Length: 306
Image: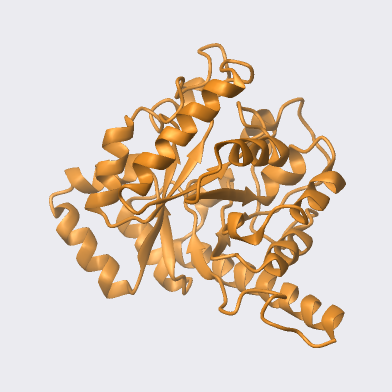
């Protein structure tokens, strides 16, 4: 059998720097993305607010972005679409993530318009059980409609320690709202470390149309959970660049490539080590790990389809 255009995207997915775990000023993030030969970069509302407050303002940011040949792929960290934008106050993650999510829908869509961002990464940062399913559906559908009015795609990212914890929950929500401008952002750490049944989740990919699976974040870690919660696991142990651990990075990437809808992929490491690395080292490991993962996945596809 030969590979046809339905075996994986007709065009390679864009390479994206997901810098949520890289605590650097925006100029450094652009520099890292440039040196890593990325096509784009995701940015948080906090970073965009810092850019607005910078003496160069958004004009200086736009000039640097254009000079680097980059675009902003996603506004990363949108939670105020839901009735509760934060986890409960007694949740260990509350203090850490509260500033990131303390933006209204109006402010977030204004950012998207001002910085020409065509996709947002939405999360359900509310605690599990805090909101009923019907209300979640109504709120998410309303947000998708508001985003569509500005020609914005909404990627829903499931996160194990919050209200939309896994792939089945994300797919149930998208199926219920039935909007044509939303999909699922897959983070392979969240997928595997937070899964109740990883094999069942991988099988679920076969049922989800490829048009819903456009964005992928890659990282690596041990398969074994060392803490009692995924949030504790992340904070205490972090996560490495793809290819530096035991997770099924190649399998997840190959599965999404085969769906034919993958538009963007990139690394999203979190670790204390990142603070001690130079921009050059972060860029080098980003470049090698993402391109290495793609090369391995494509080679696997060619081998199985030959």
